[in-house]
Image (cartoon, rainbow, N blue to C red; front, side, top):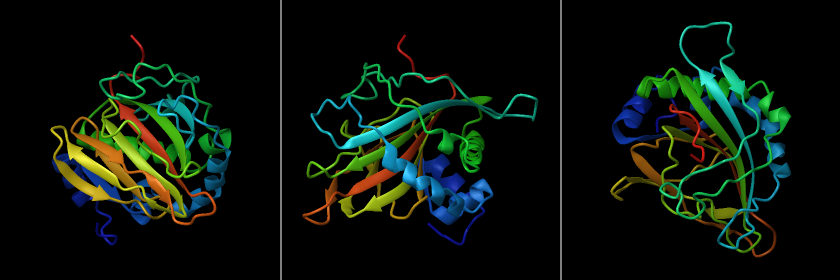
Length: 249
């Protein structure tokens, strides 16, 4: 990743050709047209996530919130570019999530200070417009997930379901914070299981972009660096789907 290159031709080539691309915080800011440091005031909102009560592996290491949006693409009109939809359940079939598939999961909504922040709409819209250059679409159905994975129980599992697809077109994983942990490496595979990349997001607003139709991904467990105290990994995960939200048929 060349931090001095903001043309994004290399990113477009990598995402279109290989199915994934990584960008640092400065490049994400260039894509958004703003300094991502304005987002730092929002990071404490990850301290206020309620526990995920649906974990089926018996763990208590995941905290999260969830929200849904629709992005309209194309010529400007009187319709807002980004619409927040009423709170809805998160659902995936077992074909995409072997552990939690076929569960109707209701999570707490995203905090309004996040949704109405100066950076929120530019972030979702810019990523959606960029993804449309890879796979054109008139609209995106976006799900946004705030995650905190902790080491309270010794280790935390960002992806307890293992290597998987999310059943969408594109996924963006943005790192918010890493605190006193090791691990948390994201591994990317072809759909036949061949490993393509192994990377670690280290700095706030570093991001990994995935073509979910073409690759699988997983993140390794996080381990505390010290015997005392809790470590954590905070992320914002955004998914973009052209054919509507995944819902129980």
